[in-house]
Image 1: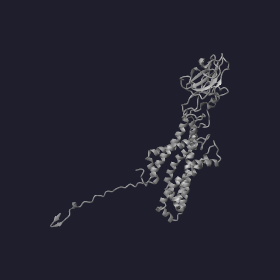
Image 2: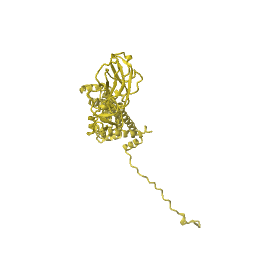
Image 3: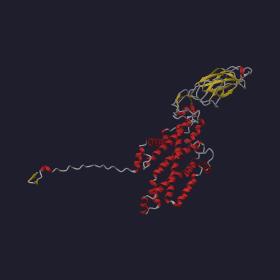
Image 4: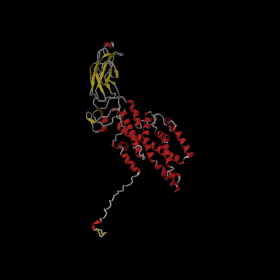
Length: 469
């Protein structure tokens, strides 16, 4: 208020300033390098799925023999090369008679005088003698007048003519009442048995055919191992084989579990040793530099130039490994001695970039020696490169073992590995594909999982963000 030219302030002319706005800043904990790597890795679903597969394979290898305790060397010669199937029931039958394979049932008696093959009739009354089982099928038929013998054939499909009767099982001569016993790898599927009369040389154009459906069976002696108080004529549940049986009647799942130990042992130990050796070698070369680096890397180039297969053969000779013997030790040594130059080159390049950094110069000023700086400062900073190299070296080693075992230069029977199982399964690939399919799937899944995980780990360790962009 102004009075007589003098300004007199009023009480309402002054107001307090509003309170300043307060910004609350929440401190976030610092994220370490490896925590950031794990965060980036979790954002890659392929890498996480591959990591789960790798962990499952390790659990499959270590815990599998306890979860599936079947003996991998136990043979069931009556059920060889059976494909995967649900548990089946089998009838208990007495022990088979002496001898194996086709055998003559009745005595040889010539009927009439021999005639030409074109005039011979088809055998009559082709029937079963007893119950047809997967252990044996007994056939009988009436003799054909003028015949000098008979030929027996088996076909899984109906024969279309005399030239399409199937597998020739054997030949018998004519008699008052003749028969034949078939024990040649029978399975519980329908078979078409055909019998043709012969004049001793040629077969007649007419034949008799009978469809036979063998039932699963097991001998009394084998059944008593599963259930001691079982009797002939009873029905027993056969052991379950989810992946089938191999060519010697051994459980394929148990063989894969045992073979996984061999394959993963070679596939992990050999790359681990070679990568560690290469990291130390490359770290020394990169840190020292000069003439020592030149000589060390020229030696690495010489190792790269060595032919692996020839070196493997020389090591087998040096260890005295002959044909048919398992060469795990020479294969491991060859993979270690020839597999380190790649890791050495990568680590050398990283160390040469880091050796002039400030933290290395500070360590030198504080009196740190070359070994201390290399071990405590340089190698930990290239650990990401070492891990990525290792993840890519493992599938390569597994594939190398499988290849060498497949050609008979690595693990050979009776020692199982995924490669040796493939080598055995390829022989019956057309008729029994499961013997090759399952070990090949194990190799493929392992190699793919390690490759995808290595690719994801490489992206997560890329601190510059070039790959993530």
